[in-house]
Image (cartoon, rainbow, N blue to C red; front, side, top):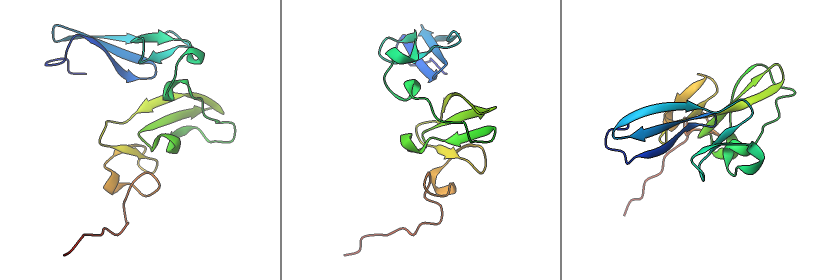
Length: 127
């Protein structure tokens, strides 16, 4: 998180941490185990009291260990499964989506559907 030019305040870095910007400097804060970042309060809270993606658990009971695109959030986030347990959400930047093949956030044009647009025909208006 680069705080230069940002107003003082708390900025979400993912569901388990946030950055506090003060006078252009940043301090990273990790949420306690079992808590997630609450954008409304700007601090960590119990997931049951939080709205949005950070409060939503995903079913990992039949998934191999790894990272999975969160298609319910248009692949702007992805989640971690380990030993059949959901370990939390992670965020891509605003202009990228999660690429399950590459296991990283990537440009939509480089990612296969349903997350990206790779291989899809583009149409243009002519007149």
